[in-house]
Amino acid sequence: MEKSAAVANGTILPLMEAFYTIQGEGTFSGHAAYFIRLGGCDVGCVWCDVKESWEAGKWPLVPIEEIVSGALSHPARLVVITGGEPLMYNLDPLTHLLKKNGFTINIETSGAHPFSGEFDWVCFSPKKFKKPHHSIYQHANELKVVIFHQSDFEFAEQHASLVSTDCVKLLQPEWTKSSVLLEKIITYAKNHPAWQISLQTHKFMEIP
Image (cartoon, rainbow, N blue to C red; front, side, top):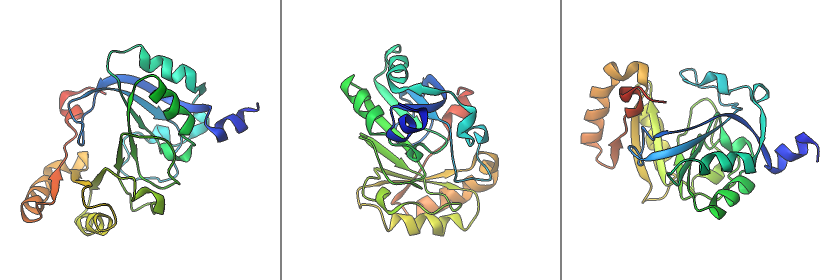
């Protein structure tokens, strides 16, 4: 099978990096997890802290069997698929193989592409830079909105109105503006208690 066809059907994927660490943000903050970071992103967040992930062609195409083997070499059975933008790819084969090997699978996505894959937890983090695909809203377990500007509170509420009522709603300060925005986020959460606050604790701990 040609590589382009294999990428299209999700049996090989551009792997930027894979590493074992502690999840630092969101609902699963504090949990040991194996991160699978796929290369390629067409969303283009100006404040992205992994811009090197944007160009998919920079990263090796790795068979999903090899990716899962890497995950199995660590004791935790929690996997986080992230990017880049992981939903650029068909994630059905990778998640099926991870499930077969006993993993709980989370995804972190902007939702900018059609939904694929079998997940235990879907962290939907919409971005102003590219409109989410409509398929993401029914799957979102967690709505995590990065606050970079005052207008992002209204943006957060727009998407909150489209997810399920039991979706966890999180506001997270953009790291470089935390000192400026955190007080505003705290005040907002106190006045709008449907929202919780997420902090990037891995950056405080200085781990990947």
